[in-house]
Image (cartoon, rainbow, N blue to C red; front, side, top):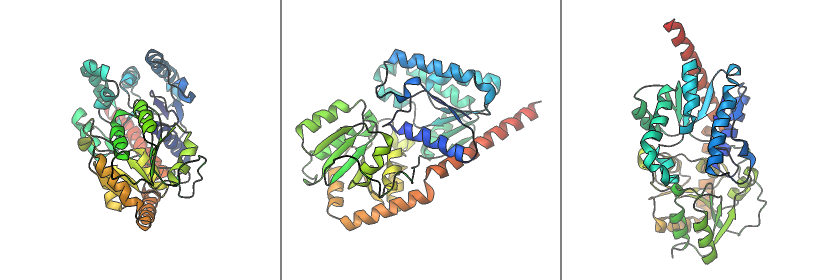
Length: 370
């Protein structure tokens, strides 16, 4: 398996865990996997745009030279992977696309790309049409993909958690407040950071509970400014992957206040942080979108609130702050459901089977064509 990701899987971002955990899981079930990623993956700071684009094509060229060694290419979806997808299509090589969100996500992150949206969308849609299989993280996103390509094999394989690493007894290496709600992950525009910060300043937010924020990204300045004026907000910055479980395990709750940029109601959400929070035995407060909202409500392991509602978020934190027994019960239920059904081992097994089916179908189609 030749696994390619053009967006560098850097520690502190969800893609880092997803890429490395899926690869580790595939190896456990018998696959040999080679990862192709930008050379700056291990660097703390990301290079400028032009340097990154050069790396994108450099990574694809490196994979081209290894095609004879692979049974299939697994792509973490990116519009600039178009040359590799086109070449693989011409060569008859099996390609799987992993789709984590709609096209609009990139226009939210990089507003200057909006005038190019027709061309960029065409590059993405073409890759989905050429793929031998597509993996999405929610059933709503599967429906969206099928609307783009009209046909093809599409499977739903959500995110998961490393249940050995993310656990209730994980040790915290940081000096943190005694009681805190936690946000961790990339500070992207769709994460609902303004809602989160407004909630911490809302009168309903409990005065004996701090808000700890771990991560980095586009909204960092907003977080730093809020932390400077509100002593309840503690900004930690990015942390290595192995330190995150302990920070989660010692928190009162995890907060995932995603906003509706990109029509999350239509495509659903299953962010990695939800699974990792629950695996650590901590209840999660989430925006009530399909996927994450359903998981929380169906299993009684947190609180689902309306999106972009700071007061509802503050009130949810206050509710948990005064109900230690309820917090403990929610945490245990969350841990149980992740261990039973949402570990990375389970996700890798599903992924491996889907890849095998795609390879088998490709071989059958070639035989039929001949």
